[in-house]
Length: 96
Image 1: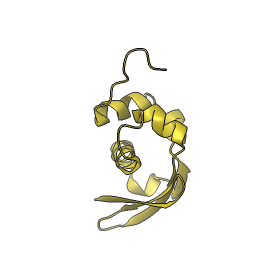
Image 2: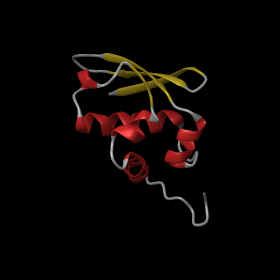
Image 3: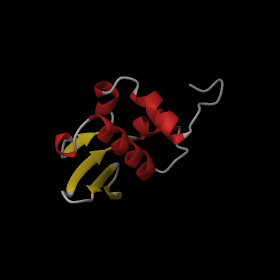
Image 4: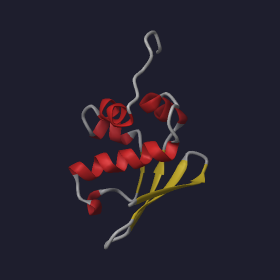
């Protein structure tokens, strides 16, 4: 299970529960949030889905304890597209 709590402006504490619980501090700027889902989902849900995606590609122990979500855009090919697909988000025609 993944739980997310806002601890400061644009900063979230993420707990990956299980036999080896781990705690992560994630920053997500409003620009990154808008790029991923256009503001149509909660920040917490976007972060949960980002962790689910990361866990498909790496072990829990390999996930940094502190990072900015925008780093994943550079780290994972097609990150934004994969996130939009997972969230069921489609940009409306003519939006920038």
